[in-house]
Image (cartoon, rainbow, N blue to C red; front, side):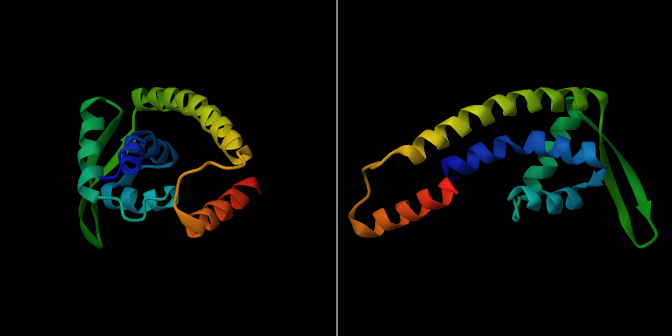
Length: 134
């Protein structure tokens, strides 16, 4: 798994807490809602393991809900402990946002980053920098 995917996976906990703070949901629905955060193809098995772990930690609760149109589903909801942890994530991610924003601002100010080989790399890099400056 590439490094950036490991980093993104680490953000699944606060994102799931946020989704559950917005409204309760069953596992498959939560996997679908992750698409808005760029996880169009989130691994459902990983999400379910994470939800079970979050339940053990007291961040979420779950209960079986029956439906007239389908099988019973385990529906997850955030707990007061989960809401408090979500608030802590908000602070931590806000601090990280500031650091990342500064990094990106300074990066786009660079005239020549170096590296890459040939004009194709330079052209792609220049296009990306132009998009970032907008």
